[in-house]
Image 1 (tube, rainbow, N blue to C red):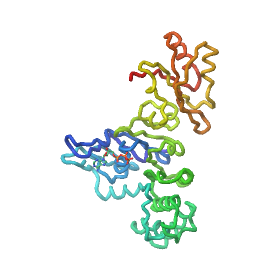
Image 2: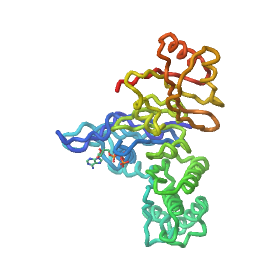
Image 3: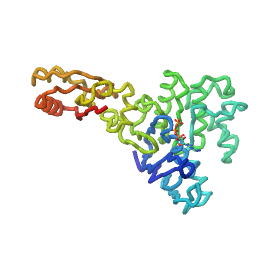
Image 4: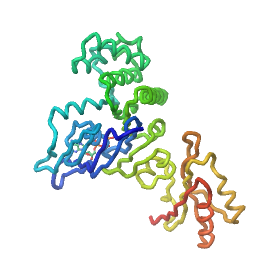
Amino acid sequence: MGEPIIQIQHLFKTFGSGDSAVHALDDINLDIQQGEIFGIIGLSGAGKSTLVRCMNLLECPTSGTVIVDGQKFVWMEPDGAEGKLRCISERELRLARRKITMIFQSFNLLMQRTCLKNICFPMEISGVPAAKARQRAMELLELVGLLEKANAYPAQLSGGQKQRIAIARALATDPKVLLCDEATSALDPTTTASILDLLKDLNQKLGVTVVVITHQMSVIEEICSRVAILDGGVVAEQGKVEDIFSNPHTDAARRLVYPGGVSLEQYPTGTRAVRVAFNGGTAYQPLIASLAIDCGIKVNILGADTREIDGKAFGTMLLGLPDDPNDAAKALSYIRSQPNVSAEEVEYHG
Ligand SMILES: Nc1ncnc2c1ncn2[C@@H]1O[C@H](COP(=O)(O)OP(=O)(O)OP(=O)(O)O)[C@@H](O)[C@H]1O
C-alpha cells in the first residue's frame, strides 16, 4: 500500500437552507490509500451516495477539500447554495474525474450495444483509435471471464455477467480508482461472492484502488481491508475491518456489525453487564467456565454475536454481572486479564 490516492478533508454538504436544510455530510475526513480495498458503509440516508458523488467530483460540496492523486480541489463556504471551487480549472477537474470510474447496482449498460461495444464506449469518447479500443476490450473481456459474450447484448446476460461487463467497461480507461456503489446489492449470494472475488483479483492484478460503498457488512467483511462507517452524515468510526469488527466503539458500528444486536434493551433498567469483545484469538476462550472455576463467579450470557474472519475469532458477548459489587469487580478484572479479549462495562438505563 502506498500514498493516499483520495483524501477528503473537512467535507460538508448541505442541501437546502434554513429550517429545511439537510446536512448530508458534516465534516468528513478520510484517506484512501493507493492499491487498497476500502469500504464505506452506512444505513439508508447516512450520506453514502452524496459522499461518493463528492469523491468522484461530480457533486459540488458546500465546503471542504478533495485530493485526487495529489491534485487538490478546494471548495469554499458559499454565498449561495453551492460551494465555489477554488484554485483549479474545469479542464483539470475533467482530467481528475477520469481517474475515477464507477459501477452501480443497476449496471447501467447500453442495451442497444453489444458487450464489446459497451466496453469500447468510454474509449471512443476519450479518442482511443477503434482498433486499439477493440483489442483492449477483448483483453478486458478475458480478464472478467466473458470472452465468449463479446457479441452478446446485455439483455442476454445474467445479473452477474452484466456486472462483469460493467466492470470491464469501468476499467477500459485505466482508472486509478474503481468506485463500486452497491454493486452487488441486486445479486444473489453466490453471484455476489463471485463478483467480490473478481474485484479482489483485479485489485491485485492491476493495482487499481477499489472503494466499495454498501449497506451490507458481509461485503465489507469479504473484501475490504479498511472501512469507514457513515452515520447521519458523519464518520462514526474508521479503521481496519478486523479492529472494527472485533471491538466496535460506536452505536452506529455496533448496529452494522452485529445487527442481531447484543443489546441490553430487553433487560430491566439498571441491569449491569459487561460487553466482552474477542479480538482475533484463534479460538473463543471458554471464559464462562474458567470464571466459575478460577473465581467461583457465575455469570449469565445475555447475548452473543460472534464470527470468524480469516480464521480468527471476533465478536461480542454480553454477560450479566453479579449483583454483588465485589464479585462484579472481580469478574471484570478477570475477564480483562484474558489474552485477546477486551471488556467494557455497560448499564441499561431504559
Ligand atoms: N438532492 C438532494 N436534495 C435534498 N436532500 C438530499 C439530496 N440528496 C440527498 N439528500 C439527503 O441527504 C441525506 C443523505 O442522502 P444519501 O442519498 O447520500 O444517503 P445514502 O446513505 O446514500 O442513502 P441510500 O443508501 O438510501 O441511498 C438524506 O437525508 C437525503 O434525503
